[in-house]
Length: 339
Image 1 (cartoon, rainbow, N blue to C red):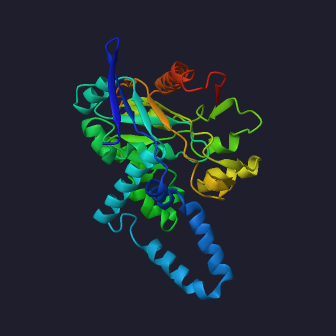
Image 2 (cartoon, rainbow, N blue to C red):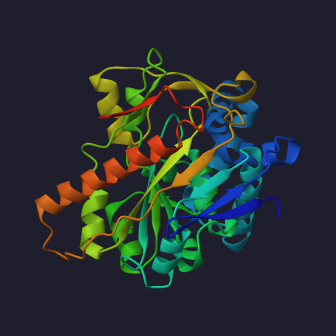
Image 3 (cartoon, rainbow, N blue to C red):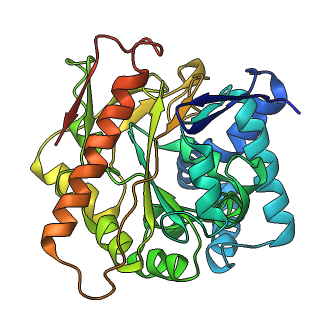
């Protein structure tokens, strides 16, 4: 095991910490490149197919085959590759996870807690919300049934791109589609996603590095789904995600509208070794899980008042979670800007 796990008690809650020593050597770097390097990889393939006649047929053929194959292909082998990438990414980012109330998650997993499963609403998104990989079931971070069944929901645009659709499916990813969301919760399976999504990227202001923008005021759909099924909402905050990439983000209403339409923001970014559209810098990511928010089961009779009430509880809980940990994480002078 690469982890150093630690339990402690705060009041009646058991705080559980998983801390992975960071390793940015060849194998972890290779795994992260195979996972996140395809942003630039697909662009390079397009350029080669356009400029180099000899490679055109091979590249177009490979992309066409990938496009028609199901995302899960090659199924069991693909899952094993995804699990390997997640395990190596854990080392590359020196992943640290703090769960403030592990007993509460365990109770939900055993059917004794608030709701039969949970929605993990994570922030921020930054350029790429890649820390959601920590929900890969093979990493055994979450207890019991929650950890075994959790699905990572992300922009559907990824699953329309050849090769990338396979990679992210192998890691446990699915399109953040309302039907998929609802079906997973109906089967008492947990879901993890970043509610602010690509919209947050359009709001990043490099002139105000002290601000962390969270686009949450109009993100209430997941609260409605929680009320519909009576499942808990768990706030999760990713520290040290910013700094993963250098970037240039185009601004303007048309850009924002286009980004929301396609699910991806057209921007320029660069990561490790200053490679355009490459892998992120090896930031030591710390994901902090707050206490689950108990949500009533209203079925199809969901009131707008309760949507607003539990949406506010989620935002307040997320802000408090950030405030509790920010000084220790070196964020003392930084603030959250809820938009």
